[in-house]
Image: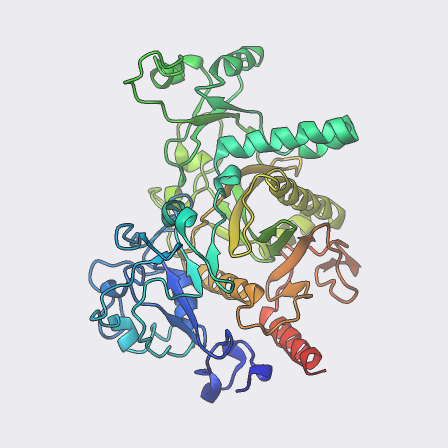
Length: 527
């Protein structure tokens, strides 16, 4: 198939699926530090070839392409794993992948030239789980010879500052992405932008930032928190480690003495230099009136792709899911994590958890439910509020994030609705889990990641002016993006729900849409 007629692999005829992806006149070489859905997507993408090395995970795969004993696959790994750790599989070796300086520029150390290709590559790629074709084995051995790297955050932190990236290379994560994804820094940056907005545009405009609960950082703001606590006796607060995920270290409390053990001797200034600095926590006012479905609490996982911070360019994925608690909501038992935490990594351990049934709804199903119960206008307001949360969060760090054209970021926003249908920002994940908890979850994440690669367009098949690519809609491009006429695919009673180019929870025929934009792009390029 010629360069001008390439289309995504699942749209190609069987005979053409082994056609080579193009950066110039060669295949696209990738590395991946995870072993879950993203690795399946990369290995199954036509013309993309895996660079062998410590991060390729070949040592965990048998000759027949199936996982070796003791390894984890995307269906065996647990949902939520990697939200903050950056990896759900084997972590790359930082020693073997450390930069090697040559002639003033830095690259990565090559692996031994005698190292064979991994067994999965020898067997012709991943198992034919959903119909994609085997990827031919790659013969290169250089650990730095790649075009695309889905790395974990630990590797980036240790290598980015001494790494030379070529013009065409793409890598996951911006250097200081944690400015938005650490809970304490997220709130700090939002508060700063709110104050700036109030100074420049007035108090009324500052109300648009009223979407995160009252929050204090501990131990640095402990005394301020105590004053607030005493002004509001009897309410429930929630404590969270600033940089952990999967519900680890989280607990609810109503009395100051419930955190005595945590604060004792730690919130005071460090007069003893040999004493270890206490772990940073945030304490937030707990949302005591969450919106319930079937008596159960839930939050919404939303995927956001940032390809540039300067200018800010943001894509919003149509599909996501609501994560439900396994136990009916009640404030009578604030110590019960199965009531209050919706993380699947927590809920799967509930005594009555049913792995076949799971605890997720698609955003499409959630939107239909809310529309039927509350009407189109109420739902329009809800999702407009979510759009506001997404953009305000990113704008709060726009001038802080170290922008690099080689970098991109896929965030996982967690949103909670209260019983007034007001959306609240709970947290933003730098490494949202890509491990599937079931067939539907796998299909969602496989499409999500395939379309992410379509947006990045390393094969240079698009025009660069598209507003929708598969399931991704362009939400912000140095300003709000409006939907084109005829693209109103989310309607209720014949009227469009929104004029913004935002279709979270709307019908998503991504394959048909991809076929149309690739056909249109090729026609434009021919002229």
